Image 1 (cartoon, rainbow, N blue to C red):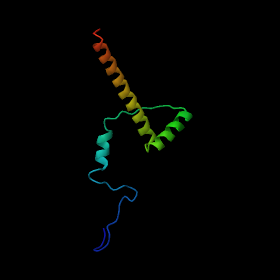
Image 2 (image 1 turned 90 degrees about the vertical axis):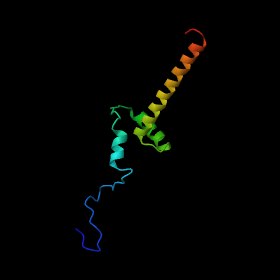
Image 3 (image 1 turned 180 degrees about the vertical axis):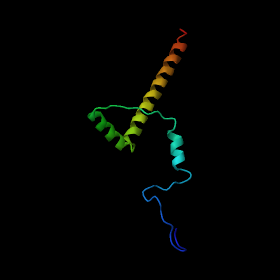
Image 4 (image 1 turned 60 degrees about the vertical axis):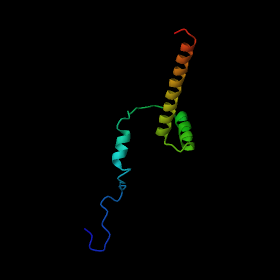
Length: 92
């Protein structure tokens, strides 16, 4: 314990202090529904993703997640467009 007028000792010097609004609980909440995946990539593809991630100020994991999300979004849009075209042709 610190004496009167002295700064309190830090028990975990290497541990980051938690801000109640953005602390460990929020991080756990954001990641609790995410699925883990083992992904094997060639060194060449890994390097390309690393450069791209750096350009976009993302981690490599964040870049891969972003790219997969964009592909899924585009696929959904193209499926919607195809359904709209089929219904507008009068075939359905």
